[in-house]
Image 1: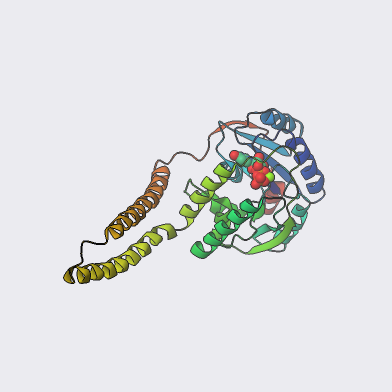
Image 2: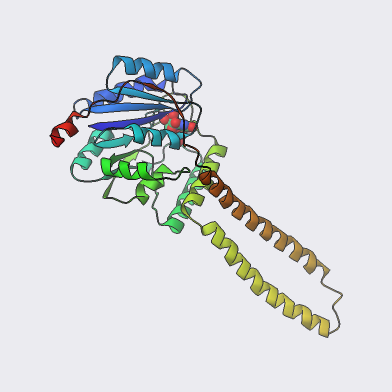
Length: 315
Ligand code: UDP
Ligand code: MG
């Protein structure tokens, strides 16, 4: 059985369309369940999900008590899923559902993670593309995880899902964690479709914060940069020190006031930057150590579907 996790935040227009398209596509392929995770929507998303869940035993819903973010929604879905393989897909049909049967076939062929990678990034502004590119490059260089064209559109074997469910960390980055766990991975390319209805739920600020948090949860590189800049400045200080002493001995030590001002400015800003970076990591540690749950489920709709295929295998 295939479980499909669909995070939804204010997606009232997209849910009926998504559930219908997915149903039509998956019905001939295998038994399936659709798990809609309502990430604290403020519109009619939850009513629509619970209506669908009532009328269709393939559909299930989870509702968060507030907006916890897409990551929380994905991980709640992973925990709830009962399928032998689990797929994650966006609610807005930007991830073409037609690809799912193909991904499913690749999984049947022995792959444990099937990643759908973006062949083209769809309609995005130049600045956005630039930011995405430099973020992915930084992730690749510092943590050795290739996120080129990566999306959250994936299909994973039960083993992988169990491994992800065991992860104790709270500040997760699903896209990278699913590569980090390893396993036999295959990639399939797809073109990002335009959004079915509604607007993107990610503001630039939200994305930027998400990128920062993902970098810090995967690499300590920014901290090492402080050390490197410390070393560079030490070398610089030695050279300048020698020059100052030489000047003093030659009797023209009164000059160089601009050097002093520059030094104070540069050293001050480097120290501030260093403290800022350390503070950022500290705040991440603080977040993790509080051990608050990643999300709070306020309601459920529909019962888990019986995984008959697995039962048969076990008999
Ligand atoms: N989403 C979510 N919680 C959020 C933001 C987004 O569950 O806080 C869901 C959203 O409903 C959609 C998916 O994540 O199913 C991708 O969001 P969106 O299409 O807005 O992102 P984009 O495609 O622009 O990257
Ligand atoms: Mg989208």
